Length: 442
Image 1 (cartoon, helix red, strand yellow):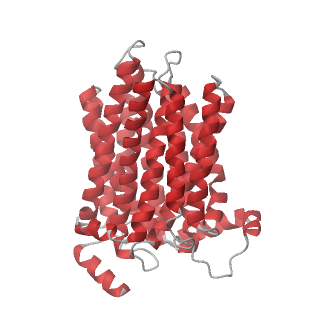
Image 2 (tube, helix red, strand yellow; image 1 turned 45 degrees about the vertical axis):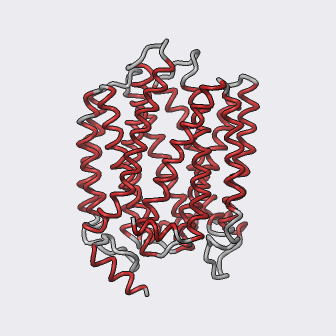
Image 3 (cartoon, helix red, strand yellow; image 1 turned 90 degrees about the horizontal axis):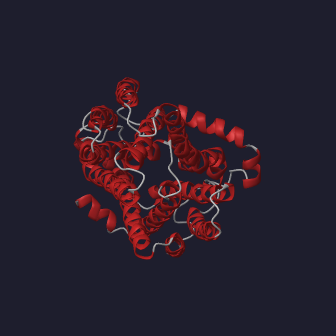
């Protein structure tokens, strides 16, 4: 808590933090509107293939555009990007509302959703790339614990607000209108930061944007070489890909369980409420992970903490999730949320401290590409092997084995990396190491 109070005393951190919290609250409201319109409408009974299609439309095309957005993050004022991205999302949501008012759930609707969520991933990359500019290097573990986890908590709160508004007025359009207001507020909050506050740190030798876009393939190769020289950061990205794949399979299964297994076709409100409770339990797990991970990374190496959480995720996926009851899903959701967020916080720190700032935007765009491709790949596999009920012991066994193998492979591959390549923060921040590192940087 002392470290958290230190962060909150930093004015620029508070301002960036406010942008994230407001933006992600709006995300929660928007996602409720989408879920209500697409997944929990009486006329629609989604199967695994439908969910996979929604994930693909929402995430996969952005993965293709990710490298290009990384160039912009590494060339343009990140503060201006946060401002413009939130305003752009507000305008796009207005477009989504017009399509919903027309009663169209076809290609135009999904295109508008794709653009809105694509800008969202771009926004989150900018928030992550700008974070090292508003905190001290030795505070990044705590900052990475607080910011994404609190953002997720506000996402869930936004979801609760959106669900409450939907319940009161029974109108997806009103919920979408609320989203527009929140995104606009987030854009205005970004203006409290100085234009150059979040970087990038340019030395004047970088190519112009047009040239950088023309040579994007070369830039990706350079980024890959940069990561190759920073082994711990590269291994962290591989770990995130594995995490997102198996966590994505669990997500698809959970949606199907609540939509088609725990409740019947005439119990949509109860199904929506049950899924909301399970999702809330995941959110609580994320929050607790933010409190525990800074302590965990003081008593063991970051790589050891990541390995431990992957192993724990394997156990949790077997029991209690394998019981396939609603109480088991709630408890399992909390535990798997804890493991997933603890891994993400640790990997965020590895990447932020293990790459040079001029590459950081492109690396976080690559991070998002891996994140999205993992989710889409999981959904595609789920469409092929999951029954419409979502209940499958064979798929659950695949998830358990996948988490366990990741723990073993990552542990072995990351050995000897107690310090990040390039002399950054320790790969494991022990109680003594943290003090020594701060002293060296002073």
